Image 1 (spheres, helix red, strand yellow):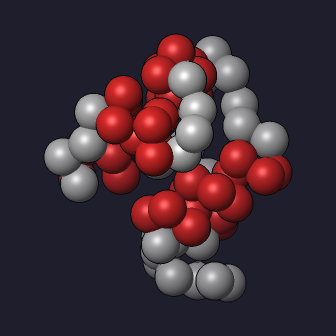
Image 2 (cartoon, one colour):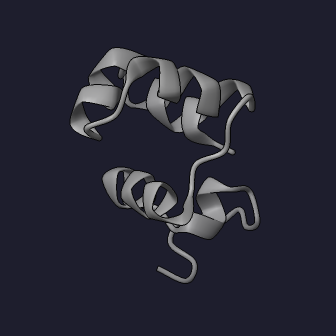
Length: 68
């Protein structure tokens, strides 16, 4: 998943992202490390936040806007 890459590109901390997504910083950390996977609702929320497709977020395409 490209969460860490997207977060860093935008200069966000895990805490800021967690606050913006109404999530826990520990949850964001676990998503980024692969220790935990987000559910479909969380994937959609994250994709919408970064204005990318879910397919791009999870690495199924190189086109950020494909299928959005």
